[in-house]
Amino acid sequence: MSLILSVNAGSSSLKVSLFRCSPNDSSEPILLLSSSTSSISTPPAKFSFTPAAVDVRPVKDEVESIHNHASAFKHFLDRLKGEASIERTEIKHVCHRIVHGGDYTDPVVIANESLYHIEKLADLAPLHNGSALSVIKTSIDALPHARSIAFFDTAFHKALPRQVSTYAINQQVARDRGLKKYGFHGLSYSFILRSVACHLEKDPRSLNMIAMHIGSGASICAIRSGESIDTSMGLTPLSGLPGATRAGDVDASLIFHYTSRSPAHMSHDPSLAQEVHITEAEDILNTKSGWKALTGTTDFGEITKNADISSPPSASSNSCTVAFHLLLDRILHYVGAYYLALRGDVDALVFAGGVGEKSEQLRSAIGEAVGCLGFAAVDEGRNRKVSTGDEVVADVGREGGGKRLLVCKTDEQFEMTRECVSLAHRGSWE
Image 1 (cartoon, helix red, strand yellow):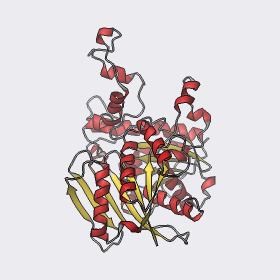
Image 2 (cartoon, one colour; image 1 turned 30 degrees about the vertical axis):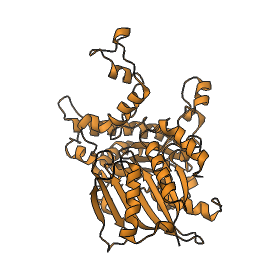
Image 3 (cartoon, rainbow, N blue to C red; image 1 turned 90 degrees about the vertical axis):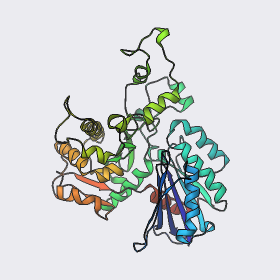
Image 4 (cartoon, helix red, strand yellow; image 1 turned 90 degrees about the horizontal axis):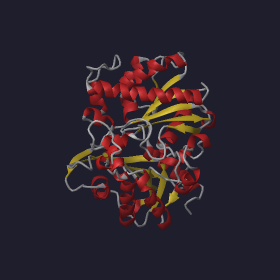
């Protein structure tokens, strides 16, 4: 049996899953264990090691020696033998999630050329590509016998219509610099598409839906006949919905007003002008904005707990109420737009991602709003139970009440591994 390691580097986290599969068997890979390291940028890092066997107790530690993604991956490998009696040499493939793939539309075996290409794209996904690169290099050094493969979040959106992917800027500059809408969360949307098609007993190529990956990074995707036709993120993961620390869509001039030395307004007086470097602007919009800037916390569950979700905020409402309804408002803008893009031919509205899967309050609020489009009303009993259920896809709408409202427990690590196995069976890695 062959072991496949699936690695997902977030902005301050590292998720690793270990799967077993047979090289001569087309059945789906079997999860052996999973591990998660969080708070990498704000030590002590929190490390967990969870065997898939239900009768084995998971390990949870705080680890002072973890100070970046490379050391987090090394720590996982060090614990692999002690906790699971697995030798590193048993690992044959290592799948790496890469957020920005540029023009790569298929997975690639990591070699000098592909590594250089990924490095060049790091500026377009500053929260993720850099950390993924550090893990890739550590993986190549620590597991030289294993084949490292890059899977790109952008690949799912490779067929975006030209009018959707094009920005209204000088097209010669755009072509020379690769400035277009790429879209992200593609591995998640690929998993959602397959899983929802199975749940609805439909061919994925015939499925139309609006899928939402709502987590600390949040996006929405319109899928027609199994292909992405629009998505809320663009050139980078910054645009679209607000996230835990990302601003989402803002007026492009906002950053200059935000950093102006003049307290009242932006001045064109050169003596008051402040040069804003792209790194500073990216840092503000990627890491100092979003829900945390509004409320002081990245925990959406805490925000919901302290928000008045029954009505839109007033001048006296607290910051959590504002943050909850702001996210709701932005989501509904995209849902409405994508409903029109699909001409109302929508099989399902799908919730996924950490917030989408766990926040029954957000699902309920969205469900109430989209009732006018013919979606089933939320069944509050189903909605409460779905977070604790075992199903990969579950209905939260009332039976027979209209278009489907679904929750999908997305799994990017599984999606990479499944595709790795599929490509191996077709001889793609030979």
